[in-house]
Amino acid sequence: EVQLVQSGAEVKKPGESLKISCKGSDYSFDDYWIGWVRQMPGKGLEWMGMIYPGDSDIRYSPSFEGQVTIAADRSITTAYLQWSSLKASDTAMYYCAKCTRGGGVFEVWGQGTVVTVSS
Amino acid sequence: EVVMTQSPATLSVSLGERATLSCRASQSVGTNLAWYQQKPGQAPRLLMDGASTRATGVPARFSGSGSGTAFTLTISSVQSEDSAVYYCQHYYQWPPYPFGPGTKLE
View (cartoon, rainbow over the protein chains, first blue to last red):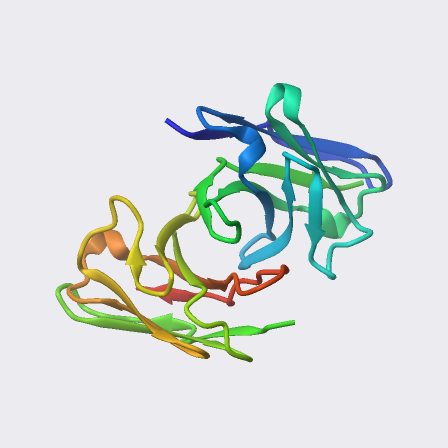
């Protein structure tokens, strides 16, 4: 069964750095785009960006470019979302999701990682 | 960038009734449109892609239609387990692929 398992909840202070992870299993990790989606408390889904692990092609939403970094390690079939300096406004649930072949449609989702940024 | 809108924001229907949810794109996206269902405390779930192709395991009471800029998700006979927020998303040409703001089905 195709699965994406995300790292656990994080509590951080403003200005701290953070990297959360998303491990894929039971599929050819290199061959499918993986995306990241933000959901702020009580709000809707926001498309952040996506990575093709096979060649590390990365596409960001203009709203998130420069604010986060998306990466992947093919050797351990894991994608990452990272921040160099967190803000309180980064408090949210973050989902990773595997795309269908061809990209774009999120067919399998991770369970989500809650990130709380508070002084 | 294509902007997605959805209406209504909230839809209240009785059990067994038909529910019709709308999604509009600010420019044509062909049939490159997906629908997702999100229940409280859960990750979203893919319902439909290609505007009208049900994902694996999605009940037949869910159907999708539309192309270009106007799309509809229809639930023919609403069940209690259908209470959720429904999001549309386009995936036309190059990213970003934004979601609509969602419709809450009560």
